[in-house]
Length: 255
Image (cartoon, rainbow, N blue to C red):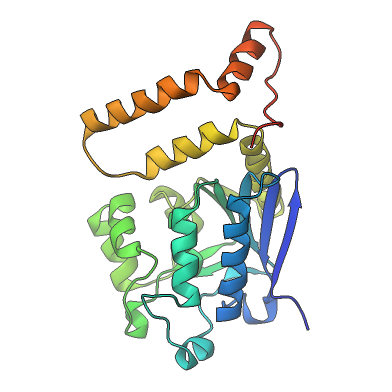
């Protein structure tokens, strides 16, 4: 039986590939469970510094497998889909997506929880929830208006029509559009650059960016607290020593 989720770690990058190409990588509950386990384990694995998600064949993901979901409707509690969404929303290490084709429903909304996302020129996006008499998921009813503005989010979520990679880039869903042949290499290059950074500094930076509590004054104080602590860290010592010695810093020994 074909493994519907493939995983490989190389250069401290965990690559997760949705591998159900005959179904356009539609997600089943078992696939959600496997992805959750992989992303969760990566958070405590010093050999993994970045997680990258992509799809096999001509699709990133065509969304949820409707037959599977109608037989096992997701709940707000501990359903596999909910567990995966909470897992990627709370992930401390950088997440990167390489969107290689169709990105429907969750194939688009999971990008809202990625730190970097790249799309092939042939990619197609859609948020079809209303068309299916459903409502948005993955926090997209909150995150899309924050990202794209209320009117553009209304267009994408309430009309539910297909949109192209350039629109996805304009509203901030992806970083850039790549030639199809260059997509994976572009995403992997970013992943490797991140993997070479001081890992704790990277995790704290992501945590600060995702923390929406308080105002500017509170944020300045929070940053200063971390800043003072980081000045005494071994990561900072290596960075500054390398600068003074006119060499590249080596953060490979940190976790």
